[in-house]
Image 1 (tube, helix red, strand yellow):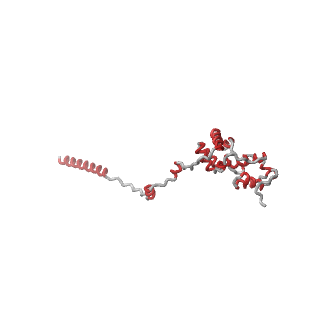
Image 2 (image 1 turned 30 degrees about the vertical axis):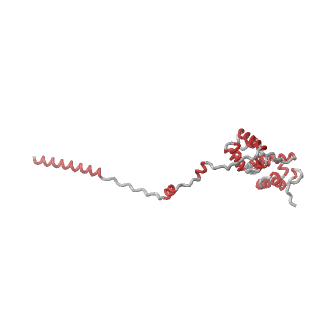
Image 3 (image 1 turned 135 degrees about the vertical axis):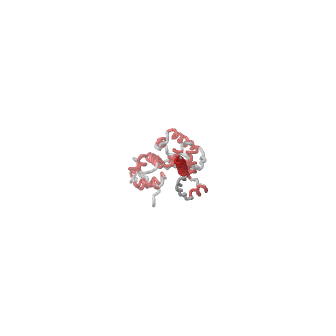
Length: 227
């Protein structure tokens, strides 16, 4: 018979497979995260001593790491994680978390993008505390604002999330060249024309002046001879 839940025995006696099963069935992290714990040979007696920095050291993103640490604290207390938020919040994908942060919390896009990069989905976001945001380089003011807005969701219906539009920069990068631009780009470059030699007009004027001067000199000489 296949076990679908971790054994009821003390955590310290869990095998690596038991830890993997707990991560999959109770914490509900992605299988790749659970597999990393097996790859690092984390058994129950090691699991109880893990800190968030240790989990991050396994190559796990910040969002899942915070969630695992929160569930682990409850496990060591002998209790289970109890949802404090409406199901729609914990069901948010990381894209929906980013939409909510931008459209309803109105924080800087760099902070929303930072959480998105660290796989912060709804079930991870509800586990965050102020220090977790600070660890992601979110300043204290925005961190407090996020937590306050998050707390307000406990008694509110789901907010409307609009698709995130591309920025004008993204749109400009995708603009296709117009037909005249394409034709211009396709035209072969014209070879440079060789420089034309200068016209000998100036030289002809100089030669004419010399000739007239010689002619006058010759006439003057002939006149003197006749005298």
